[in-house]
Image 1 (cartoon, rainbow, N blue to C red):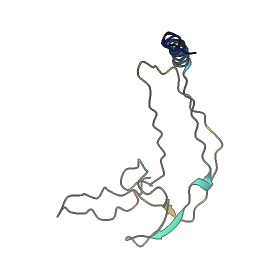
Image 2: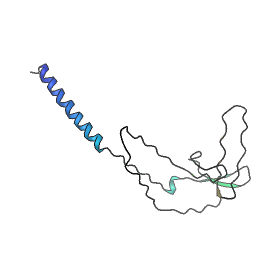
Image 3: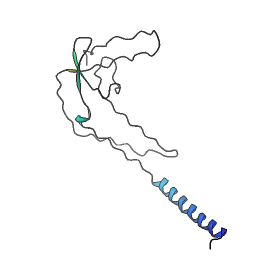
Length: 133
């Protein structure tokens, strides 16, 4: 038959085991992350723009670019990590992969100026491709 002291003893043992497991996992915790991309991940389409030129653009990633207005709007992927408190970063490795050459029949769509969200603000016109790029 179970008595209260026996139950407390079992609970105490479980708490000690759980604490040991958590402490050991915290000391060996490691983040490994890798990203792989293929040309098939980036669907491309052509569009006639206000400057009467046809440009190739990436419809799946319309705003995912770091390009300045007028430069080609190349897609960008960002990855965020949540680093636990009391942790430190030992190293970051960026390993280059294979390169795929893609020949396009048109120039890449130029990045555009942001559209203001305020009422009655002037909306910037279409920014043509920067000829120096």
